[in-house]
Image (cartoon, rainbow, N blue to C red):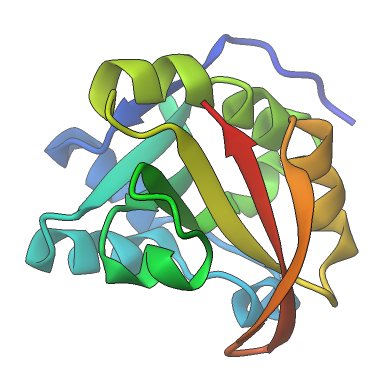
Length: 162
């Protein structure tokens, strides 16, 4: 397994990231739980409450997610200061190197800079995706003990306070 060679950081998606995001690949089974970055990014262009985030290793986009402040967050948290993390993915050639955990550990400083009014990040992780759940828990999220039915079955609701 290759190690992370350059610093992992988070940034708002910019136009120069799009070509790299188009080249993302995921395992077929992963697509049951998340989406490729470009379709999720295109939804952000139509909804100002969705904030697209690129995960960079050095200057290279190797991951992506969306921070959603819209009404969907209410199905995960009753806090008016919560944001929903969705469409999290790491490009297949970069998986298994610790980038997901390293990027999630950057959430607090990123949120404090870009979404300072948010105090909680919530997400749903499919019960049939234990690898993803382990990554989120290892990065400081905690299981709320609540569940929600998602497009691919039951999801555990996880959260981290910012």
